[in-house]
Image (tube, rainbow, N blue to C red):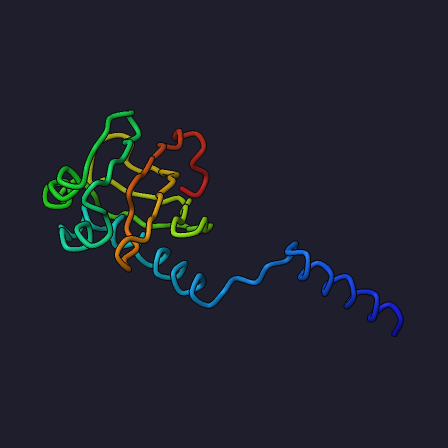
Length: 155
């Protein structure tokens, strides 16, 4: 019994000092929105879903592709129209979201399969920066890194 009281006191003290912080409901809802929005963006090129890209990316979005080149929202919309024939699938594996006020950083990975060519299978790890503007959460920056083929162990 005494042990339970000591444990409870430690938890109460940690919460009071901010060491343990429960995620507010609003942050939880936004995190779920961000996590659920990453998949439609990953699939936009396969499905030709320009609307998803237009909704998810901010007008001033700028991304860094795995080869180091930069791309903007207009280029990503064009890619959504044209890249569908190249991919069989693109699946988001995981997404972690952290908040910094009206900014959220989403980090995750996705696995893809091409119809032809080499490599046939691949994996990206990425970081997307989301910002809340005018009541909407959108991606303002992204960076994608191609995982070397020898590191892909789930294929």
